Image (cartoon, rainbow, N blue to C red; front, side):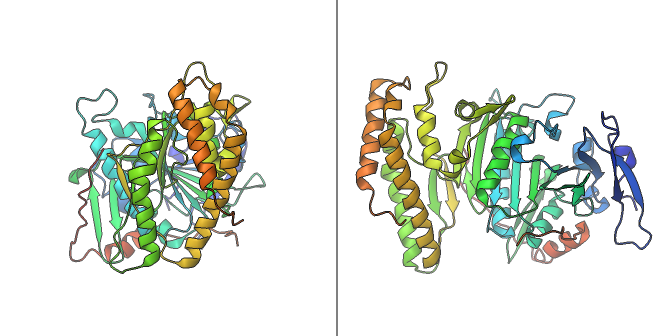
Length: 461
């Protein structure tokens, strides 16, 4: 078996430690090889399956022909200090990450993930088509990294990612040097775009206009919630890549730009709960967000569709041994993060929050009453806390360095928010699911018999 090629494994490392890797556990005559650890960490460059290799047009670089696997045993805050790194930083020609896009998977399924990933890829293709831009252009894809973070193991999601070449199961370990694996990190530059639904599928390659896409897939061993996923993104990966802009897109959202309007996906059935949320989003798009944007302070940026400059986040982060760590309270409470960004005193920069009306995203709204009540309860609790916090800390606005008009507008926004506040309502998986590229592709290819294609007519920005 040639699942792991020893010629592709970097053995130029400071550590002399090594670990045993089973080449093919399914075979009766299993082969075991000793793999040297890089700085004490298990990092393997593994060739992609032959079936996938034959389906990609560009084989000129190792990033297209090999997938990198890193078995992470560290905590998120210690990722950089324990000498972990990412492939994006090791190319001969330095690649500056302009956009670092997080797609967090919580309860979403593979269909929702494929819709979101497909939409993001369409936007990257648009950026690469810009000829007069100083940043973007033909090789603009090298400046974008998509980070998919999954809470635990989902069979269908892993099947979908296997078809893209982003995931392989036979190289995953459970322990390294008697340390429990906390996350499995896969890095691969895919040349395939797939939009998958229960009825039909659209597949595109470079020959169809798709550009290569750099994907980082973090498979957490245990489901610790979406806040923990954001922690991996902020405190583990961002200090390594040092991106210009961090983008957050919830799985299931179909983006066209960022920091703009949220539009509910059309539902053929008449559901009062869905209609209520659609009306709420439309009123927010028309009244709340544009008015708040005038003063440079938006009280809450939606987790489905928002972006931040990483240097602004560094201003409110803690510098621990040269690594910027974003406090957990900002990760958990979006409204608190927004307040701290605009009220932070910085002589070099005065940060504001802006709403871009020309961009939009389609989102799925809750149809279940129980989920709707739970969602509103969470929003009310967060809204009350931040309203009280902003009123008791409003003095930070006067020392933030903003001009007098935004300062007065921000204080007025705090007061209105406090007045509107109503009553306050106040099994981990141990194993990796086995997949093969053939099985994954066959499962998805069954629904492509009629050649039906999704066509999107959204405005790109």
